[in-house]
Length: 221
Image (cartoon, rainbow, N blue to C red):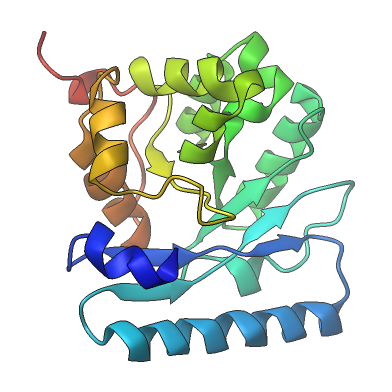
């Protein structure tokens, strides 16, 4: 996947590596994983020179009451932290955790909300969370999972997310290239440039995201 990236991404793209971490992992384990991630980032910077920018952050699995390691995994230079939950987590538990993160001065960026039962039951909960200061990122990988594809398409179609990420785990997974752009533009009412450019840029510049749904960004019909 990395070897073909030069041909599939625009030269001014920014790629953010978000390997998986947990809020309850030991400090030494976190240090070791972060070291590997940063080394990989440097290797990619050397490989692609200035064609593509690379950043190293993390995707933090929240479970129980622990909220460790947010500082280590936040998007560089920002207060935004990409977080995920177990897919069966309750709405109340998620809400409590997200409020705790906000009180600590960070901004939760909710990874693949289409996979959470509480979102599929009532996606307007994302509206409430966006008003609190949270962001929502749909995973392109979900479009390949029968269980989550409809929910992912629904969030993208009606503007119930801020960004689209690749969430690539293997060479077969979708990345944010022109082939995926054609797929998304076929049904999403929010422009590709907004989902993969304008709003991600706000995150990288440590700025607030607009409230959901993204009605002001919808394409004219």
